[in-house]
Image (cartoon, rainbow, N blue to C red):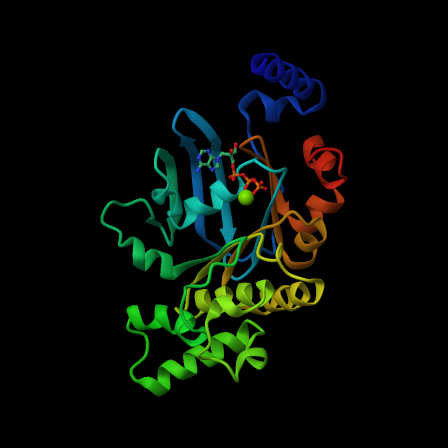
Length: 287
Ligand SMILES: Nc1ncnc2c1ncn2[C@@H]1O[C@H](COP(=O)(O)OP(=O)(O)OP(=O)(O)O)[C@@H](O)[C@H]1O
Ligand SMILES: [Mg+2]
């Protein structure tokens, strides 16, 4: 049954998609002359869960100090790719990653690399808010404490307050910093997780559908925040919202069935996609 489906979709693909892209499964790339330099790079990344291959030979440059959006239908491998970047896939049994991912030329899969330190440099915000079972203050203070980022209590308080402010949460929680983080609303919990990621001064922030649990007002706050953060951070965001990708990102990468089909400046991807599958997805025909 599966084989029939696979061969049928292969036939459909060959009928509708550019021959060049199909022949070598090459990603269609539109260069962006205005893009910031790329310090984060993936080269030929494939991911396997046991025998099942989830990502196929993905190569992409992620420009610094800008927002890159990963889009594509459910199950196409967006979260899998995002998790490769800070080695979260290491925590999944049976998951194997091949290929190279480098930050400033350093191989992130180097056996000698300190993974805890890596995850401070490359922070992550998940789809489902996951605050620690600690107070609001302690949720944000935890990272700076274990990484020795504060010299004293005043320093630590300042980091906590600034991080909460950056996440657009401080005003709502300033009177209950010592109450449990898990007692906040879903949207507030997500902003707490963003504050927690920012508190350790990361260079890269990975966000996996960070707004899917938020109301439109909280979403707008987070989108504004993402826009502000990009002057200092490199951000990679997975989103199912085309509007969100168009609003917040400068670069967009479209994944389909584990392959990076097309990437380029967000405006080009949304107004003039070169691959039919990209066009079908952004116009709602697949997904
Ligand atoms: N822990 C896992 N074990 C086995 N297979 C997995 C695991 N995580 C993901 N997969 C499989 O890998 C493929 C890609 O999944 P992934 O979660 O990366 O997709 P996604 O694009 O993030 O989807 P969504 O938009 O639904 O979040 C899917 O076929 C999925 O079933
Ligand atoms: Mg996902």
